[in-house]
Amino acid sequence: MSFDRSIKIAPSILSADFADFGREIQAIEAQGADWVHVDVMDGHFVPNLTFGPPAVAAFRKHVKTVMDVHLMISPVDAYIDAYAQAGADVLTAHVEAGPHIHRTMQAIRAAGMKAGVAVNPGTPIEAIEHILDITDLVCIMTVNPGFGGQKYIDMTAKVRKLRALIGDRPVHIEIDGGMDPTTAPLMAAAGADVFVAGSAVFKGGSVSTPEVYGKNIAAIRAAAQAAL
Image (cartoon, rainbow, N blue to C red; front, side):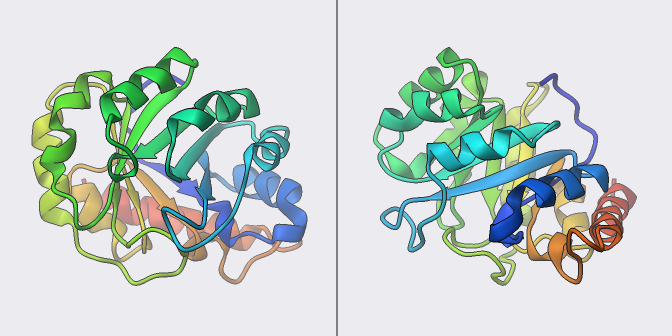
């Protein structure tokens, strides 16, 4: 995965049909998704339980773009190798999930993946300032993690501050939570380039009507690009 700061849409399969993940992944990619976002939750760090390494490995067989795996779990380090073996291209850990985020980023990279760090709405961006040199992606949460379909929390000032801290480093700014054609432009203007969208992509469509996914993806992309 090479660095490219163009707008990227990463549909979250948490909003897909759980009984048909393979065809759902194929549908969103065929309809213009740049990355496939996989939300891993442990029922401990966040109040929900989703996908373990075997499920992610099963998704990998269908993903042709970038598999972007977001770990909302604690602890993280013990599971890094398992998600590497499952085929994650990007593995993101929360700065709040453990005491040694620098070590976690080193371990993710050592396992052959791009290293992401996620920051919850209540966490100041300064918490990750000193790991930017070993980080490939910063995921700014614009909802409190744990569930899809939540109301967007405005993190424009935080994203602007992050953009300034990153400078010319090749680090993606990803936004996760409440992204749609109304909110994505706010984040794009502040400096973000990767947009996670769940219900805003999957609403109204299905594997039998995938063109709806395409229209939804295109609408978010166009709105974000217009704000640049």
